[in-house]
Image 1 (cartoon, rainbow, N blue to C red):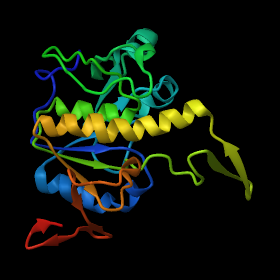
Image 2 (image 1 turned 120 degrees about the horizontal axis):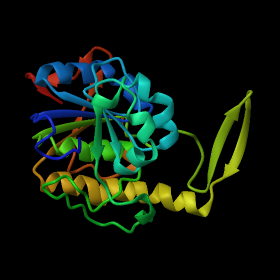
Image 3 (image 1 turned 135 degrees about the vertical axis):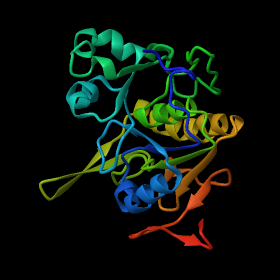
Image 4 (image 1 turned 90 degrees about the vertical axis):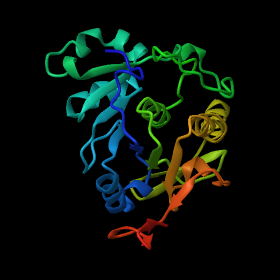
Length: 242
């Protein structure tokens, strides 16, 4: 079944889970937000200690490794569906497969796409650069009023824009990042700040995020509702999340 506005569950509140380092710290608050708003949960690639309604995959290796552990309905791109017709027809998962319709991966180039358009039949003019961003766009099909994003920190290794630090066997190795990878890293920050978040705002979707989530290094969070969490859950004042 293909994803479109008529085939997705309609929810006023949706949670989108990445896999960044801030996710674990904020989990008590995420669970509280879910219970408080009866939110639908979309996860990029991973199982978590929370009920998942949709698990989304974009990378073929991650998909083949994790698909049988995935919770809820399984969302893949049309490209993955074509690559893995035999796997997606497996009786254990075939009735749970849903297809997110994007343009071809070969059309992805850093900074090429500056806006998103989704047709009524669910077809996008856009290829999300990672599963987390695809999960955010998937959330928009629910026609939500509020979306909480968590674990969108981005690259968690140390280093600079030109180098990353690899920790192995107690030793630190400094590895130069290729020019192409640097472009991709910069583009992913650009896509979140300049393309995806404005698309959500245009669709009147309020974005919420935790104060300790780096959000790919976005410095200005003026259009994001920042939530503070504690080890017990949401930090509130007068019953309102703060």
